[in-house]
Length: 368
Image (cartoon, rainbow, N blue to C red; front, side, top):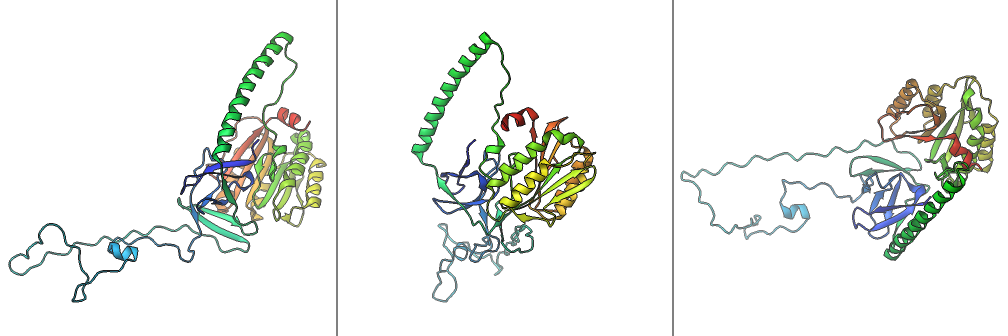
């Protein structure tokens, strides 16, 4: 799986690449310096220019009621009497009508004022950017703004040639494999999906982590076969987080809710990571988890993201809680990971939510 994203600068149109860990944030073009969004998936999301709201020296919208010279700041030519000189048309000037009456002035149309996006209150260590479409993106000042590097044409050409060669080898290899299977018979199944445990960025079952995250794990009676996978996901995924990333794990079963650490969101270090992973593996699976309550309490901790890992089906009541949490916390993102889904789970209609389906057969292959 590639550890970089390729995107195109909306200003200079250069092809750029950046580490996948910056997905969902902001970057700077190495060629022209334009600030832009880093999509989670450039194939489906548009790259937009961003700016710091109310930054000193930022241009204000042009006023159509002013002359072109006034809008651009150019000096206005005057006559000997000191009055502004009007441009003379090619046609002869119109004569004043008899009687000394002048032509009535044309009515002026008020300039529409663009509605500015509503920003949250200032926070320490956080900077806000607005996109051309009006979205607000939160960036941690501890990390700074990364620079997306230009993709060299030679590298692109070499990549295309290499991809063609690999495709041809795969076609030949696939044909050989089919012939072998037809002659010897099937010997088992093999997973072709990439393992999320190999991602070199902070994640949980492949879902990339924000600066602060609460991970809710369903440890009800039906989850006993997934505890080892929980441990591996936490141990592997939290190993590659950026410094300063804060997290908390919430275990939810029929007895209630267990939080690790109990004091709330904490900076992830090796000790905390191992404690979270060990607690998940040794959790007691009992009764039916009240995911709605766990999600609601997790959202009240004011994280940037809540990741819910469960199995089977997500009922409508839990989906309603997710929608309510998204409505009540404008900067919150909620991501669902459903292992062995019983039926398709719809995601509340929001760009700040997603759902990932995983089969236990894939987990077994990934954990070998």
